[in-house]
Image (cartoon, rainbow, N blue to C red; front, top):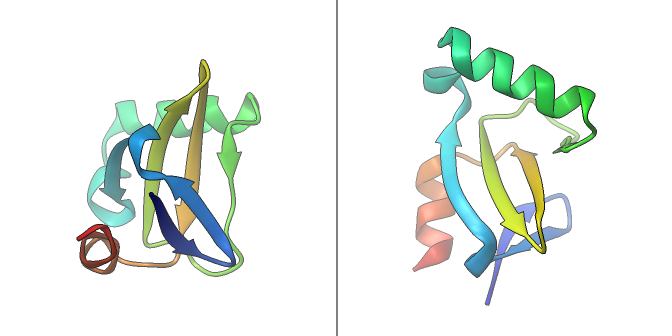
Length: 80
């Protein structure tokens, strides 16, 4: 099954490692470094709007971070 994350995009549910709130996690120095490094490596898939959360995925040996304007609560409802 797939999870719709907005902007006509979807990710495979089995590849999701975690869904994180942008406001709560981006205050950590380690998380900021992780996101900056991922962006430099081309692993971040941006969204058109202001991102509220991000989804960390791993599939076929590739790690991706999908930024989304949807809240964690909305994404959780879509998973159920």
